[in-house]
Image (cartoon, rainbow, N blue to C red; front, side):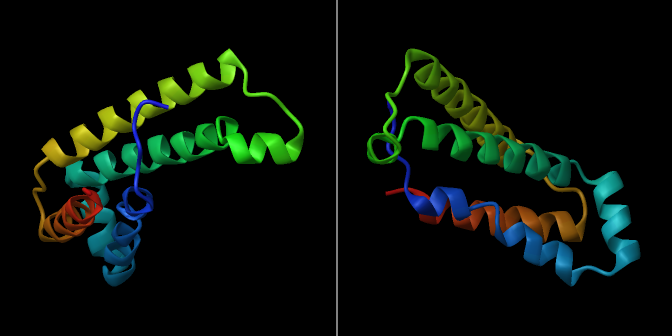
Length: 118
């Protein structure tokens, strides 16, 4: 593994769910269709899920408990997932919100991402 990640990084996208929950149905639909930040959040969440799944493949303790070896294919999946996660996070942080709901979601994600930096 080339990078060490804090568990806070994995929690960075979680608060966006609170933003969606606080919006009314009409505002949520408008924000989802018009603000690019929400598409970036969705891409980031998908990349994060893929990264978490790939992380379990290269977890030495889990592999030992399960009686399996970590293969080069597992390492390759992890590296691909890590690159996709980094790319999605960079894109998310570079995407400016265009609605109030998007600004709120973006500020929550940015705050969580900054808090995750060691």
